[in-house]
Image 1 (tube, rainbow, N blue to C red):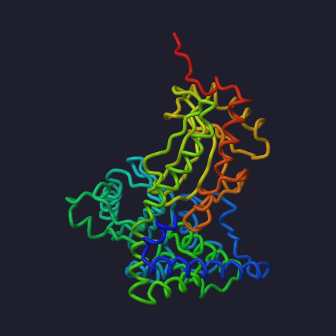
Image 2 (image 1 turned 90 degrees about the vertical axis):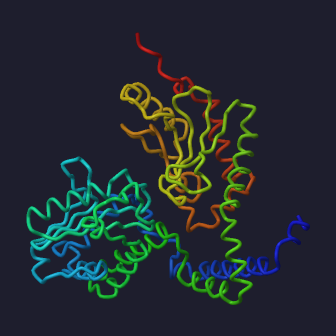
Length: 420
């Protein structure tokens, strides 16, 4: 270990030490003033916030007639954000829709319609694009707006660039020029600038909480004050900047080794029970729906799984999942029985059961295992992958798997017999 550390450039060691000291300083301050500042309170963490939830929040703010009572405050600022002119009568004729269904059965997350024009908003905080999705939306907007002699824009709300798979390179310029990318960094700035002018305290608190959620859960930013201090530390010298860039280039390898070592330990602990452990190829990259699985039988139709429900290591959940897209008869014959068995076996975890989907029983990691749900803004989550104590994440996985193996009817996981 000493030989390994001696090979690390001194600038990196100094930067790591300084960063650790900064983080510990902020932790001490938070502990001292915890009751006054409640640094861990996140209103949105009390609910399941997905793409549709976020769309409803944005649509609510953009509608001048909604109960926020701020009129066109948010709408006016949004039009300035997308550099689009708006006439005074726009707010009076505006209609706001979410999950607007097109004739093709595709759904646009948000649609704004008024007497002058139409704006579609495709909201992509975590989900992957569908083939030709933006192209289909643009074609529909062009056809509908032309028929009613209105203008149109299509906003691509995402931190990634527009991919050619969703808007092909050969898209006509008349369509392509009206598709505007907007990042969640810009959207957070829009919310924060609007919050200053909100007159109702409860609405301002909601807007600020939404902006905070976007900063942490989508943009992956740290606390603003700590972020500023870390930036100052990185820019303090050319050596510090070079060290920070070198560290950032190696982060994927760090995550890969953490997951490999963690799962190798879990596999070794479960080997006597014949439980097979596998990780998804995209786990180290933080891809959506990536995770690891524990199989009690090689050909089982269901398994024990941990999975991030969104990209960038967001929404860690665990439970019983199907290996392939479940058929209706599997739901009818197995899901209810498995859900009842899991609730009986793990009454302390209050798992969620579903009549449809891939998961007959599941639970979020933070509410059941005391393992963070969203790892982007929880640096200590990664530290838990190193821990091997009796109360560690690794041992909790082992304990759950062994309890299922020893006390549950494992034939419930087997494929259904073929019907004659």
